[in-house]
Length: 331
Image (cartoon, rainbow, N blue to C red):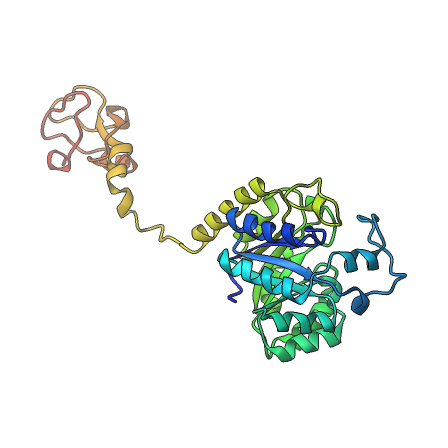
């Protein structure tokens, strides 16, 4: 997997354990502009204690039971990966345990996304590093020290991207932190992305203009769906608008222009710019002053910017009102 020009639809667990929903979410995400879909691979007994608390944004059921209820079998994971392939999108899933890494290797995943909550899980990071596949790291709950550690573990063996992310659901504009994008690039010399938890599209588009080559956004059929992610996700039509805008930004950013190359504007320049013309009928021998001049389209004569060079020149022929001055008849 190439770690650039990726728009990731973060499906996560919004499928709520429905295999059918998961398959349809892949198809919808692909249809509406994503070129990568991402899930979360939870194996409840391998990653969480029964007593583990819920996050504040989702208290609908115990965490352990939620992960257990919404998990898929190996055969279903294989089918989901195949569905992504059939839809011509990349397939990703974030592992939340060592056992989840084994499962994802079994189904043939091509890259890994490390969620920000696993940044300090060194055994997990080391295992992924040994595999050597491309890795996308979310920085949401991390400080620079945390990120330094994980990058040092991964950078020798893996193509690496680090995503600016604020783990706030939803994230207010004041907490997006796009300034971190350039800091990540300068600090780690790696691909840089942005995981967007805001409710709109402005942050993702802004990140693309700052050089983020991976954009991730939570995706759902409807914000009314049950679960931990749906209400903070983006519905298909708005997701499509965002994807189109990001792709346009990437084309724009990939095509710098030479401001001195105005060949394409040559004809327009002649049409729209102004030439110096006679403001009134002028006789032979007139010594030109500014008040003798007018500045009118088209721009095929002496350019208006050069009017000072004509002041003090003597006419060697008479000029009618609105006639363009020419150097042939000035001395």
